[in-house]
Image (tube, rainbow, N blue to C red; front, side, top):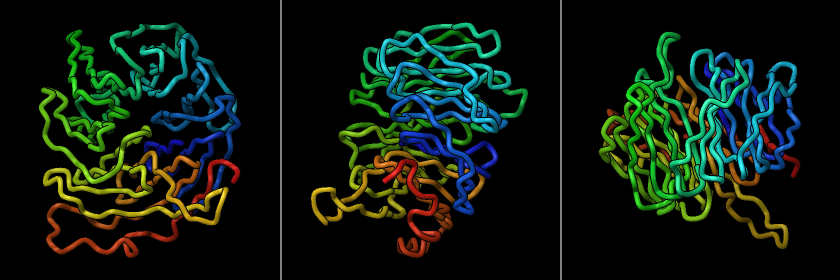
Length: 329
């Protein structure tokens, strides 16, 4: 399952076996989109929030109209399931898809043509994004200068679109996600050796490493806080870990609600899968692999704070499952 905020942070979208649009502050379900993906693996919301791109266990990515719920276009051509999608370029007119077939495809949404196929990965592509040197919230005049991918082959590839160069950072361990810092200078890589690695985008130099969570079998997606002071990661044991970005010390470890096993009354932890941090506030959303999304208030975790972090119960904004399951129980 996955979860994403809109550009302004007023709404969010979650995906499991269907896609839902929420007002997270009110816990209000606004719209449900029935999708043919089987299981939704990733979402990308346009900056103007009028359209979004989805992918799943089938071999097609779909462009949707947010208000009408109609599918506007189907992007095809991959030889395997599509793991990840992204939108970028001028007026969000470029769609990117990364697949189990080891390729990344770029589509022009205005001309409806395939722009390019990138086949540099030697294993499944797990995440893809277009980045600007202006950061995650560029002005209208800023251009997406970098195309960044991660792969199970252990490499993070950064394509410099201005210079036509490919930079490859081989970490030697499968990477399940790459995410960009708000200032556009760093990337965080979620790796299958239970570590999140922080790299400088321009040089590939490793700046920090964050450990303490469990990441061995599932595709997990870390996130930067709204001010780049914190990096947060899901964990396969149902926890959420928050570290200070610079010091790499653990600020707090939060635990999501448990669920009853189908064969017994034993309570088991739901593996958390993805984190979406609000673009301007200390709130974040957490998705789990059984299709539950929870809403958290992180309080203040600025590195300048010297007192011990508050206990988890006081950090938890309201109740664990505030916007409910993204699929029927």
